[in-house]
Length: 311
Picture 1: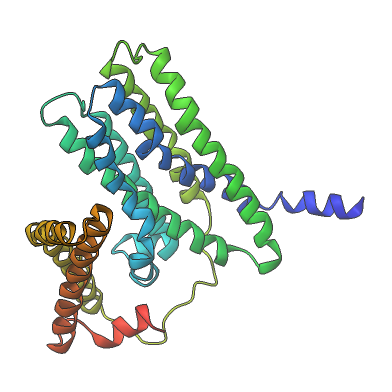
Picture 2: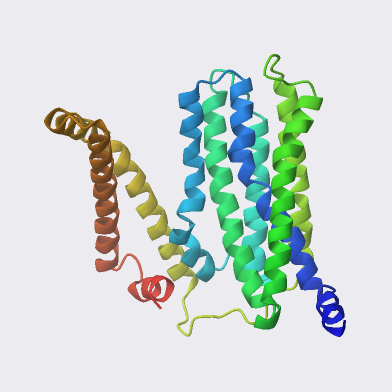
């Protein structure tokens, strides 16, 4: 009996309670770029191929390990001094999630340019939500001792599931209640629904402003200047753009390779896989080469790169 009471009393810890609301904030966006968004697009009469194209918005979740070290090391100007490293990044990520949701709500996918703008907003939502996940996880690890981590994780998962229910069943019910169905598409219903989802994200914002900054945030023993951080951020941006531009530029070559392999082996799936792998590897090679050149010419700080991604 005492064991149960002591376990329940641990849930009175304000940081464990806060984890429930942060979990809600993390779980809310994911379905808004998956099943809920897919239903909106289908009701708007968007072709299935275009709906598949929106799956690119999920890349933020798949590749968040790439910029997680950057988020871990890089202090944000002004906000870092007021809120600390974790809370400043958490607040920025949450505000970006809200902005992306509002941007999606303001574009009708059935209009001429609405679909393209909505796709860009969905990509922003994916990357912002993934960044929020990174920071919340870091805060969870540093906010309490190891003996309370299981309770933190339990509350996070509970909040995450509640957020998914609100963004899934809740959003679909709201859109239908406002008048949009498969037979009769009403853009205003979906607009208000996504606006409402954006408003609920302020639960996470308020929680971020109320929680304390962890006292055990690990700092690098190597001191970096503001200029070092700016150069490192520039390196990251340049590499991302190099990767994207290289990948797009190789589309014609990739198509030619796909056609050649398909004619040679008569295996369409093998041809598609080989062509896309070639395209991706070449784009990654170009980004790595540009990064090596910038480090070699001392445009980027080699010591900071090692401190962020190796140590």
